[in-house]
Image 1 (cartoon, rainbow, N blue to C red):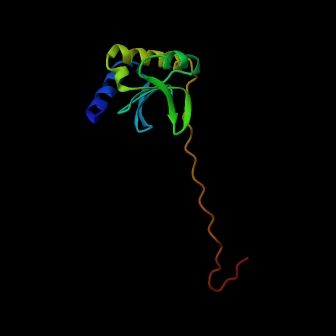
Image 2 (spheres, rainbow, N blue to C red; image 1 turned 180 degrees about the vertical axis):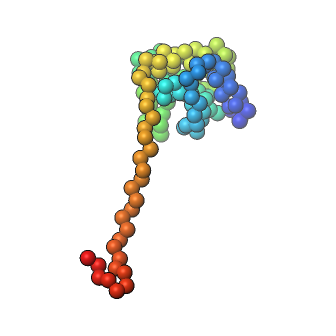
Image 3 (spheres, rainbow, N blue to C red; image 1 turned 135 degrees about the horizontal axis):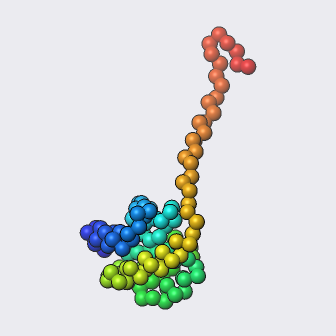
Amino acid sequence: MSDLMETVLIERTRALIPDDNVEQKRMFGSTCFMIDGNMLVCASRRGLMARVGTEQQAEAVARPFASVCRMGDRPMPGFIRVEPEGIESDDDLKSWIEMARSYVSALPPKTAKPQSAKPKPARPKTSKPGRSAK
């Protein structure tokens, strides 16, 4: 999928998620759409990643052009990868978004984690000229 097609997919996806509380965020090398801090779908050159949950996973992978997402060699239960051919029509894309929304909307909102200050590395004690180290 070209950069232009990825941009079009992102715009199509955003148009099908009309909620005001949707956040658009770069993650996983793609553009993810979050509801209350929970990932709904990610649109990328590789197609769509939809978070449908483990209960809907069997139904989801039975659909054409769909498979369980993998992170390296490990499967990501509840996350489905949809090839670009599986989201060519707006109806197909909308059905994936709705399946993901049915799962994600039942999740509790995530609260932002406070940024923790990185501890400063300890500086070795050095003696100053004319003083002895204690």
